[in-house]
Image (cartoon, rainbow, N blue to C red; front, top):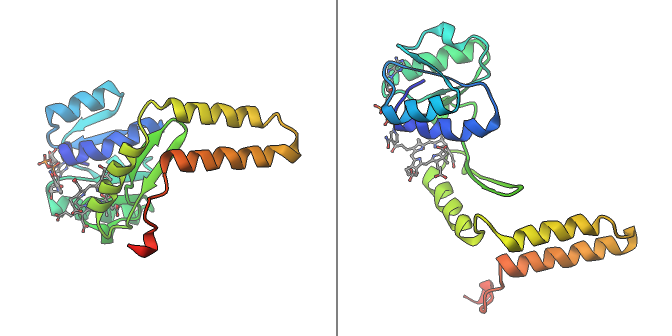
Length: 181
Ligand SMILES: C[C@@]1(CC(=O)O)C2=NC(=C\c3[nH]c(c(CCC(=O)O)c3CC(=O)O)Cc3[nH]c(c(CC(=O)O)c3CCC(=O)O)/C=C3\N/C(=C\2)[C@@H](CCC(=O)O)[C@]3(C)CC(=O)O)/[C@H]1CCC(=O)O
Ligand SMILES: NC(=O)c1ccc[n+]([C@@H]2O[C@H](COP(=O)([O-])OP(=O)(O)OC[C@H]3O[C@@H](n4cnc5c(N)ncnc54)[C@H](O)[C@@H]3O)[C@@H](O)[C@H]2O)c1
């Protein structure tokens, strides 16, 4: 529910899930409309109606009208549909996490509503640590693939070595031990 910048930020991580998406708003921003239409999202430009929840598994309420958000949340809850109400963690059955994807990695960071900005800050720090296209990571994954062909006795040692390499590449030991800072 909603078609402004906050609704758009919530829509974005749902697109790659492959879910069938429906958006309802009295008025969609041009940016929301463009992004949604390019991903086949169904757009209904009118106020929320309880029937909008038919066949829905998760609803995100991101309008700028607290009364409408509360109404959507109550309707969803009475039908047993999971609700994410922006700005209102107490009404949420599901929270969005700050998500980082790198190749096969998915890192989801959450403070369970305690401080969303902190989740974002940690994501940005991790993003800097692991570049988007990373030959080191690709090589590591390829070696793991090859290690699967090794006999069981040596495989585990080879994988331990690969993991040690991963740790020293991405998380080099600080010169000063943490405990003596
Ligand atoms: C992770 C992320 C995912 C996403 O939105 O997809 C997300 N919020 C993000 C950013 C962000 N949100 C806010 C700021 C300003 C700084 C700050 O206040 O912290 C920033 C930072 C920024 O924008 O720079 C304001 C804010 N957010 C919530 C409240 C209400 C409250 O806390 O009471 C308020 C205060 C509003 C006010 O001022 O009144 C509530 C929620 N926000 C959540 C998720 C859920 C908890 C997740 C968790 O615990 O980690 C939860 C509970 C519900 C939900 O929305 O699912 C996304 C980062 C994406 C990324 O970039 O990686
Ligand atoms: N913009 C921000 O940076 C920000 C940050 C944190 C929290 N918020 C909160 O999130 C809310 C949404 O922010 P935004 O910037 O996307 O607002 P916005 O004004 O751009 O968009 C609000 C959307 O809600 C729709 N809407 C309102 N009543 C409706 C109803 N009954 N049925 C269907 N659609 C309805 C409007 O048509 C519009 O598309 C704000 O109320 C604000 O409290 C915003």
